[in-house]
Image (cartoon, rainbow over all chains, first blue to last red; front, top):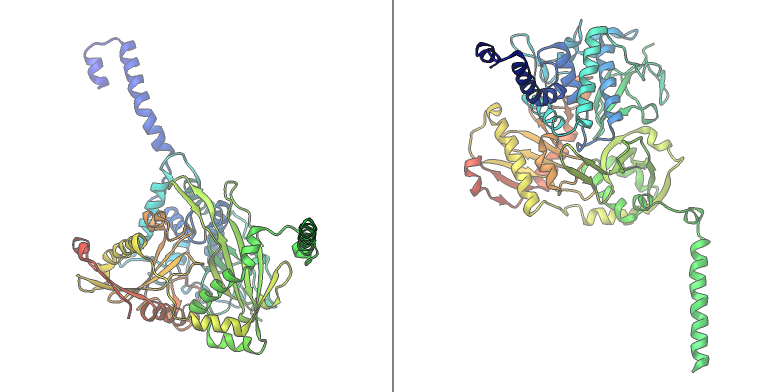
Length: 234
Length: 302
């Protein structure tokens, strides 16, 4: 359109004003689009991590929803578990005992054990690509649609928080504070500190083995999940 | 006659004074203002509903054995105050049954979700989680203790053990639609024949916002859980947020120790309880594909 204006010999001023007008008209929706919440693509490491954090924590209206702060804390705690399974294997344990497989990176931790593995619905397909089952994507898409409806609110902030945590982790490694790092004893049992597993906090789920439930007074329940540390081995 | 009126009036004044004195000279907890929520948490009617929920979904024979000798069921009850969003008026509570080593978390939601245009408001406290914990025996500080005679509780639970509450009318239709959507979505993955699918719906509880469904031919359990009352149409408008599926062939183990650290499994005990509640106590429904949905009929449970 601006080419036509030039070719037709319109004065620069008129053409410029016209272009400005068009830009202004376009800029309103474009500006909203730029401000809209979006996640990194699911086939990128940060996009994949973000989807796991989102999939594992409650949003407003969902069962186990408490607050924005609680869900954000739950996301961070899950990321700490993933990192601990790579970087903080306690004395006496082998990584396979905690993460089910030898894992050298966070994608390996998430996809360990396949579709019904360590993180339900997150796995590597037959081509070796890291993928998630359809219901994960359906829920994330739904949450994104909610977040981008009207003025940005809790949905938007929670999604952005998940993506922010994932981006920072990929860029700099674990920067957040692991609130469970200093735990040394739970209900009379010596433990290693840090959380190494999480499960939906309902119905008495327990991951078994040497995992020890972190109680409420140690903030062991966050973001709809119960976190578990490990029994300290002699 | 005036004399009689005077005596009656005096007696009335004395009786009113006695009632007022009685109110003020009760226990210390009565002397201080009691929050409405705490009152609800301590009410026998509500605690009986919680117990019925636990009886159906969590308690076993071995749990009851521990209570028989004591002759009473003890509930430790308190309101808890997690930090909430500034616009959230929800209330939270905890009910601990030390004899059963069970800790029950409850919530009475009261907030809005502008993104969904939904007001989330529960009329009563609802169970949000039940955890078995040995430390529940040691609790006490900050809890009010409510005691119920075991024989009375046993009688009530026995009498109502097969009593069921099922969705009716609009709620049933919405639930049926949500389940049908999930079933149809999963059909291609389950290698089951297209056409009518048989599902079993577990009874609902007035103190819980979750519902379990067993999809028989698909061999899957479907859990619908929400912060929102299931009777609220908003649950079903946004059921993407409420539904979770469990594959009975892939997701069930005897002990989670077999899959230590994984969050993808349930125990056979848990699955068995869901199957009892859906198949034995539940209501059987036939789900037809959408184009045949008009002919979709529900049948009484078997």
